[in-house]
Image (cartoon, rainbow over all chains, first blue to last red; front, top):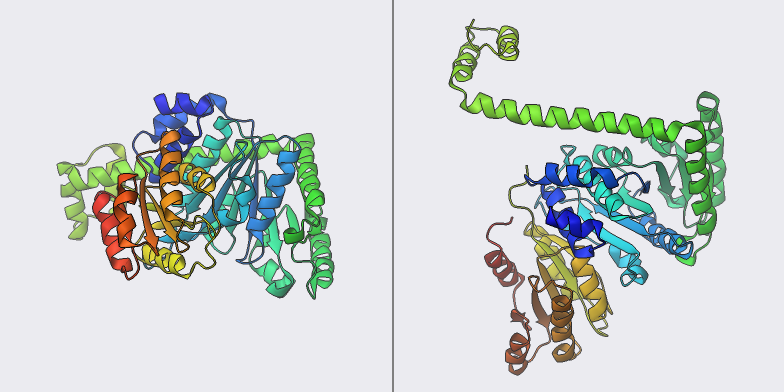
Amino acid sequence: MELVKQLLAGDQRALARLITRVEQDTDDVPDIMKAIYPALGKAYCVGITGAPGAGKSTLTDKLTAHARKLGKTVGVIAVDPTSPFSGGAVLGDRIRMQQHYLDDGVFIRSMATRGSHGGLSHTAKGVIKLLDAFGKDLILVETVGVGQTELDIVDAADTTVVILVPESGDTVQAMKAGLMEIADLFVVNKADRDGADRMVMDLRMLVHMNAEENGWEIPVLSTQASTNVGIVELYEAIEQHHQKLQDSGQLEQRRRENRRCELVELLQHRILASLQDRLDKDESLLALVDQVQEARLDPYTAVHRILQGRATP
Amino acid sequence: MAAEGKIRVLVAKPGLDGHDRGAKVLALALRDAGMEVIYTGLRQTPELIAAAAIQEDVDVVGLSCLSGAHLHLFPRVVELLAEQGADDIMVIGGGIIPENDIPELKAKGTREVFGPGSSTADIVAYIREQYPNKS
């Protein structure tokens, strides 16, 4: 594939165009994925999630700057929600990362969630792979952590950072939203505000109680992203988590599990699509469907026959 | 699956304009029309705009300028996109643009100009016309 060859040779425009194809789930996506497969595995993926206004984009910007200082190349995927009313979206995260626009070592792409059938997790994972194949050392995926779709994306990340701000209320909220299950690191941003220290304390107590079961106590850090405070510590905490995953074998285990999940997801997707197609067009199947609709045949028997490959008894 | 994809528009303010209310109104109108709008804010250089347009693989770059520097800035963006092999990205402009300047802008690659008093509906319709296969 010509575009893939260009991507592997470092052409940014090719990368951008391939991302568009993956987003649209065009027919050539399987070929694209096959072609880049051998080039995968080098990138480390960090998910950054939290409520709107928590400072995710600013943090992502500063982490990117630090990574660049250390000589790493970075890919950033900034996800914003699609309007359920119009199907459109305003993608305004990259506005915070202008210092990197002209840096060839940083590639920033804004993505809209485009509905919530789990579709985004499918395409975002594809985009992560493209950035990996392109040669990025670090991939940062920034999402709004309020819905199932965003939690799916976090599945694709090796380390997940959850960002809270002092105004976000209780740490009980954090517990309720399932954030304990997905967070590898907690960050209290805007740490100069009232209540920040208290929040850090409360979170540390919470993770300590949780650690009894898991044996890994989630670090709680504080940052002031806008003034670059705490960024180096956060970066190092991410590296420590990476190291821990590697040393314990968990990184490979997680990735194995993710690959398996992806296979199952894809299989389900294709089988369903193909089945839908047959149900619409295959005459013998149509007759079967008719019988079920008229209550002359129960659906269980019908399913059995369809899966046996026999539409008629 | 997604039929032909969404129209992606970069809305950018090159130069030293002081406010971006108009650009924001346009961004929201484009969103309400079902498009994906990447908004990059104030004080953008043509280089920053072209870099963002290419990474985001947008269909349209909408440039807004109120300070009179459009005759330099708009063609510069067109030039940079062409230099980087992206001359298929459509560039349109708006803001405080005197009628007399429009022919020169068009000659230098700005496809259409929406001066003061243009309606967002007209802009939406124009973009839709250029990309009939996209939603």
